[in-house]
Structures are given as C-alpha cells and as structure tokens.
Image (cartoon, rainbow, N blue to C red):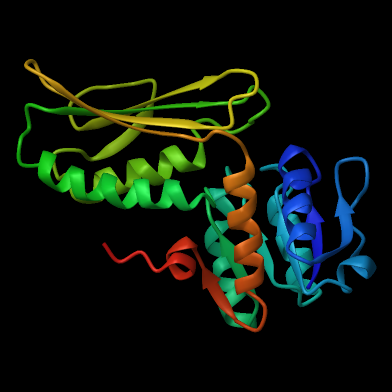
Length: 237
C-alpha cells in the first residue's frame, strides 16, 4: 500500500517505521517545512494526517479534492468536524478519525463507560480527569481526555458538562499537564469522603498510537464514509 504522511514529527516518524515494517511504501512526507504536494498525494492509496490543529481541516479537504482516503489523528479541530463529516458523506469520500489510536485506550474508554454507569447511582462520588502529555502538544485538554469526558457525561446524569481546570455542581473537571517526553497518561478518579476509585491508562511510547494509525490505514481503502476505532476493533461492551 502507498501511504502519504501528512505531518512528519515524532508521530509521523514512528508511523513510517511501522508502515515500512508491515511492507508498505511511503510516497509523500509533508511537514511544516515541506508543504503538501497534491500531485504527490495522488500517488497514495491512503493518507495519514498527524499535523497541527490549525491546518488539519485544510489538509483533509485537499485529500478529499484528490480522492485520497485519509486517517486523521490530529486533535483540536472540533469546530470543523461537522462540515468535513457532511462533505465526506455528500461526496462519497472516506475518513477515519480517532483522538487516540491505541487499542488499550479504546478498551480503557469502554471500561470507563461501564464504571461510570455504576458510579452514577452514588452521587457521593465526585468524578475528575487528569491528563499529562509531552510539552509540544498544542491542544488542551487532549482529544482523549475529551473522549473520556464525553463517555462519563453520557453515562452519569448528575454531570452536565466538562470544564478545564474548573469544578462545581454538575461539572466534570479536567486538568491538563504538559511535561517533556510524556507520550500520554490519563487518570480518571471517582472520589468520596470515605474512599476513591482511580483508573489510569499510561502509554509507554508512541508505538501503540502509530500501530493503530497504520491498522486504520489498512482498513480504510475501498470504503466510503466516516469511521472510528469502534469500526476497526469492534468494541461492543
């Protein structure tokens, strides 16, 4: 399979390594110093996009313009998501978006939902999320923290919204830390006056994210529509 890498930072390099190990060919490597070339992009069977929040929507539209399926791991572009999803369906394109491509994180999220359903019956427990990432991560909170927060809000009617660094009645607080060389750690805490339940996923490296992105790239060609990790790993807990 011929892959275009849009965003060639640490994640892009890790994706390249795994893609080559799995027998794929990299036909384009685009970065902030090497603009995306549509002519080179047309040679690709699929694109994998790990760039920046301020350019991701434009990059997706360029992939659509050139009929190239695109796997997107960049987060922080929620305001453009509905327009892109609608264009994908209306024009028969294909996109695979995940805020986190780690198999472990997606299992963690499903268990998080199950635990929240139980916790929701006991209002004495106050829930919170803490996420820690490398210092170069631009968006805050992380897309994974938002995914986890949405799972909690969907399953606990005592909470109405999440807020960054802010608690209060009906609010799920999220705290975000940025520390050098931390691939990603997410901790969910349900705390009462008498005890606490703490649930953590800690990424040891970027390899799990990169492998998931390559698996998504292998999954996507030949399909049309909007896809996510649920479609790839069949989570039906």
